[in-house]
Length: 71
Image (cartoon, rainbow, N blue to C red; front, side, top):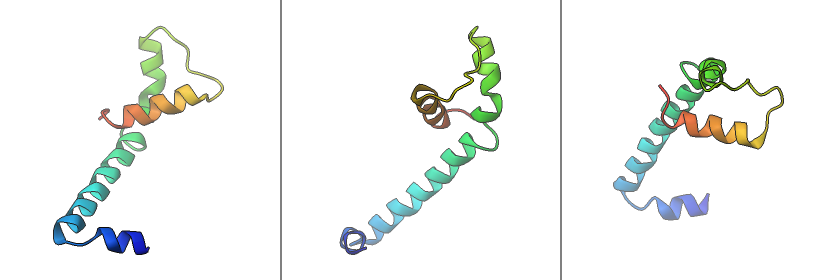
């Protein structure tokens, strides 16, 4: 908490955090509701691959990456 207060030394810093929160909300929305996790079986099918049965770290990395650009 002390670190956060020491970093937030101006209105600009507060605005940066507000913008970051908006970006995280959009990112989460892209991952969850409208996006890649709902369509990922089709993505794998289009690439000629099967949907993984066991979740690997590679799959998790793919999900996180897809959330940054998929809409």
